[in-house]
Length: 252
Length: 225
Image 1 (spheres, rainbow over the protein chains, first blue to last red):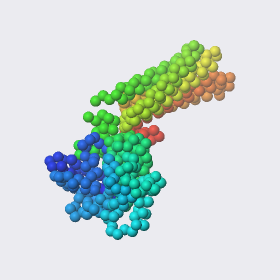
Image 2 (image 1 turned 180 degrees about the vertical axis):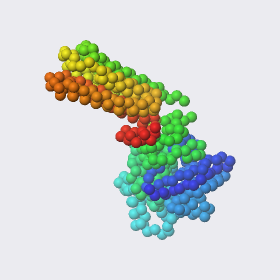
Image 3 (image 1 turned 90 degrees about the vertical axis):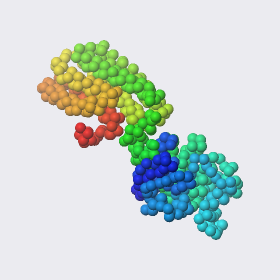
Image 4 (image 1 turned 120 degrees about the vertical axis):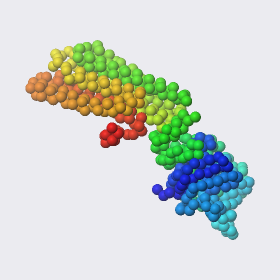
């Protein structure tokens, strides 16, 4: 298995609060990794480290290394525009721009390259929508406002928007928490389809979802990565008692 | 923190304990009937099997219900999965007790072939193995589960002794003893099968507690000793 993201002795502070403590982990390419843990354990913070989203928060300080393809993305000289193209993020609540479906998808592509021809943009829209299985539904409504789509369609559109800029890694922060069970099942199916091309890291409160959809799982508690391993092992025979207590609902 | 599911898991333990007790009783009675040439007792083993079958279905249903409602993970999942397997093993053991009772019914009206010495010994071994394996499940006692596994060679040895005696001292010397000797041979074989089922239960208990599969992997058992 090829390692896509490696963290070495990663520490993060929000002011005086030590939010990530010596996190050492390997996220493999073309696999889905779930990060689970109680609220405030640092799982979303860890996810946001991978495309430097925490930089936007005042008083954040980081130590250690986060390597992707051998490059430490925490270094000051890391190009954040390139990084966020390579490592895209889907959020809890789908956040399409108040533009048409078409413009949502080509938005990133236009930022990353000037003067792309209309034919090329059309191609990007079609390929991206096909990857998230929305093309047949939306091909005749591309000029319609994206904000009029259903929640599930919006979330798929946000994934298509990422795919349009050809990333390597998709970060998903509770991507199904606003969706109903059927829509959740369809988004999970989409994740399985996408993993052959992308490295997917998902943060979720829903343990059943982590068990269903992921290949690897990491359990975090109070800023520490307590246990990391293959999902079937973590959910049937976790090694650490704290993991066991959390996944069996004994934590707290 | 006591969870709601804990109460239900305790109930499951109780049910399996009850299933174990009924099964042990069936083994005991089937061989007592043979020893005492007690037709009524043999018939009661056969009649009572329906109750064990009914309880087996109830326990199975309870396990499926627990999985559906709680989506258990880790040791809860291992406990329920093991409970289901043990439930099935116990039901098989009870069926074997019925087989013994049926062989007994074939023998009760005929003269005793020989005094029964090793069959009751093998019965005691089988009963103890079943009892220990169920106790190991209920208490999660690995040492007790391993003790069950260590008892299995004794059962095999006793079965061999019984088999050798019946064939060499009776069937080969006097062909007319064969119909009765075959029934006793089958009973010895049935008792040894009960010990094999108890061994399966003990291996399941080790999986439940340690999350390690020792079934078909004797080397793992040696390593953990």
